[in-house]
Image (tube, rainbow, N blue to C red; front, side, top):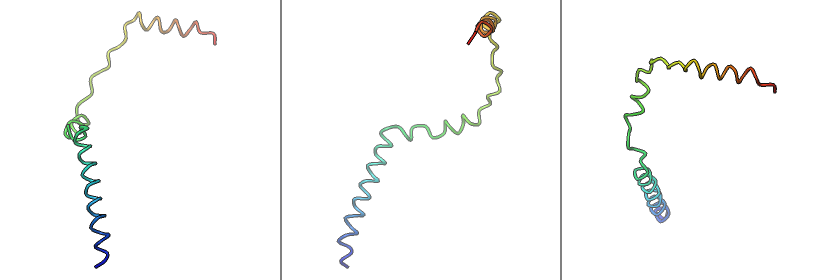
Length: 69
């Protein structure tokens, strides 16, 4: 029976700590969008990457050729 003098305050402190952590996570926005990341993984992302302009590619090739490192 004497152990209750220890277990009750410890359990109350544990509940308060868990409540504070939960309150912080709700206030900081951890539970704002639960479905968005799941749908982003499944989104069709097969659009081709646009090619660079010919002038930009030529400038890139010229800058690589002139490097004398």
